[in-house]
Length: 82
Image 1 (cartoon, rainbow, N blue to C red):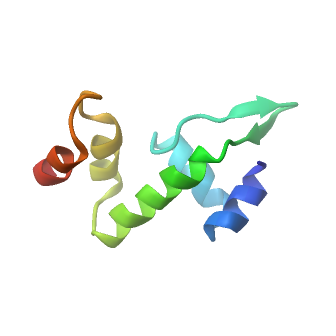
Image 2 (tube, helix red, strand yellow; image 1 turned 180 degrees about the vertical axis):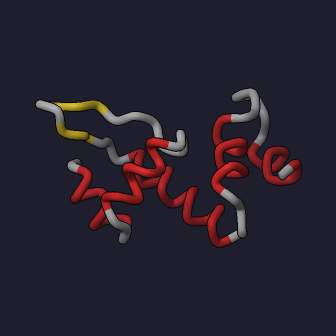
């Protein structure tokens, strides 16, 4: 999917997607001829970001939640610590 297609499906602006990438909340997408190309999994990442926003998490807290724990840490333990 292109960034525009992802934005339409997620109901957000493409600039938000680029921002989430720049701060490390989304993994860097594959590029084809210089354009971002996303798999369907990006929609799950964006849904997770939305849940975190609704819960009142800051961008820094979301970064820690997504990237600041060992992969073996259960999601419930991550949420509890934050």
